[in-house]
Image 1 (spheres, rainbow over the protein chains, first blue to last red):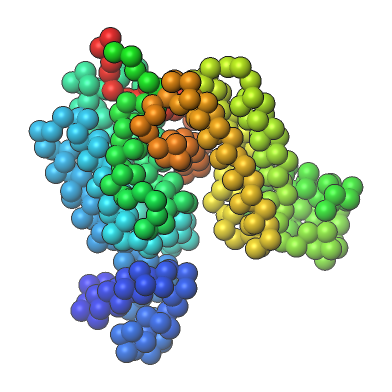
Image 2 (tube, chains in turn purple, red):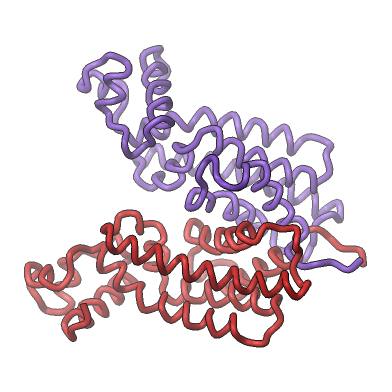
Length: 193
Length: 193
């Protein structure tokens, strides 16, 4: 998996997915980009789905690393939630559009890869839940709300973006993150304090 | 589209999708259920994707009808948001799992059907935005939040459920709706009033 040749193929695929989009990119395009025959390319990778997984693997690993540091930091739980959402959205924005395609297409990955992806998702959710837990324990977040529902609501809000987001739209990714964090932390109802 | 025979096929497909799931159901199963040859069935419907669309069309139409009445009612904007989320989740629950599959698969529908679906989604979003607008105008909802972001956050939270929901799980659909509405309306932060 980690031969120099495979790395080169992954880098070429990432570049093409970014420029042309995942669906418009063919295995032939990737082969052309690295100057290989299509048949030889299949010696290194099994399918376009596998390439999608490999291309998104490193950004996801980095994202988890950052969220882990955030979880362990001494920031307030509110700051952590805002930053969690921002890091999540930024990773998707930087790896647009293949990170979004990955969310949509992961069901078509092969069984062993799907199991690995499920493990990654589990770890990621656990980090978010740990932050929420810190917030509930410290009296910052509402104890009466279900922790899993809070986590799923945050992830749903962020991940659903792949249905409507287009880079360079009306709002920047920072503004979207700010609005989402505000809704999650404080809700949409006006407060008269 | 609306011959008695087509209606019978749609009803059979709905029954099978519910019992076996969409992916496990074959066109042959549908043909067997209505006592037709597979070839004759293709005279009435073009593909399994089209059947999925036809099966979900009526529940979606009914859901829009209900949300429209809700929007026009004299309930408070907060009550409307709670009820909007409940109606949305209940429609998905009652038509589980094909409504979820529809969300996942709608990209594979034919172009003219996709355009129709886009129109339905647009109308649905507009109803939610109208409720949010009433809330902002009446001073119930925070004016500084972007209206589209509020709408997308609510829909994202609800629709992402198709990734984790399983009927008969730990929380009922009513409890899930309650938690989501609470998070949207009041946020996760503790209030000291």
